[in-house]
Image 1 (cartoon, rainbow, N blue to C red):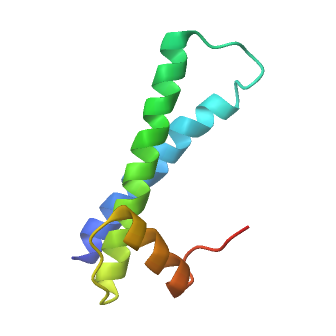
Image 2 (cartoon, helix red, strand yellow):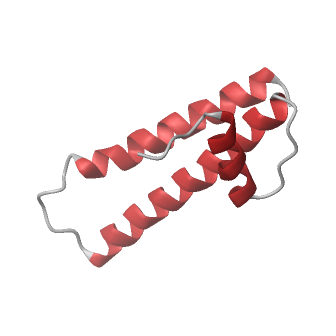
Length: 84
């Protein structure tokens, strides 16, 4: 995995995070069912990009990961994530 690919994944992750963060700025209003489904979809995209970005980073560091669960587990072990 190249650093270029990792940077690209991170850029996609940042955009997805900002898209979901737009919802937080409107937290005091009621959302329609369609809007709620859109928010859920944004969250799913963010989570998908997150584990893939972690996977790419860890593979770049020499680890072999195959699943989302394994990516998150290795990221905790490596110190990328912490339990708050």
